[in-house]
Image 1 (tube, helix red, strand yellow):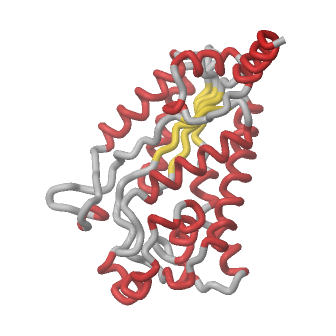
Image 2 (image 1 turned 90 degrees about the vertical axis):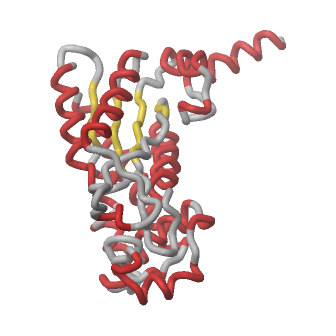
Length: 261
């Protein structure tokens, strides 16, 4: 009876791993998961950049990892690769864009593209059939789309498909912003970088990375402090609106992409 129960447990694990994060599993765990039907994998892309004086530099990395795990869990039979956290953030010398703020890390588009492509090719080699790219930062969306399209064409006669899911990033723009407007926030408060939309999402996901005592400074200094928006109306409750929208819409988009191919 004990042996039978153990075999039942092993079979269940093979079909649906208890953990969805690839880096938390052994190679045999991943092998069993793929054999059990977990043939979709998400590659989450973040970035290490400034987000005003009130949010940690790892905002995009933490956010995309947590949201990717939620998406994978909702999808079922899906694993999540480690976050790619070195991305193009602007010229280094002289510094441009976010590189003007201490702590931001930037790499060339060529280096970034090489890492993304290497990850995709590795996962195809291991037997994943649907490889999904999602990105939490706007600067590399077009490059992710281009890489996915090129590899998908290359592998058109194979069972493997590469999907760039633009909905993940786009939902954090208009649909989420519309939800915040319905709660009474203005466009100035919502902002486009480190305002109430951005900050609320982070508070819902990991409030330890947010410094509310610096909201006034961020609003007062504005662009000079790396903030385009006003974070003073931010809250975890408002952020949950964005989390729910991003997860639901991304799951829908991935399912549609898989069904199309």
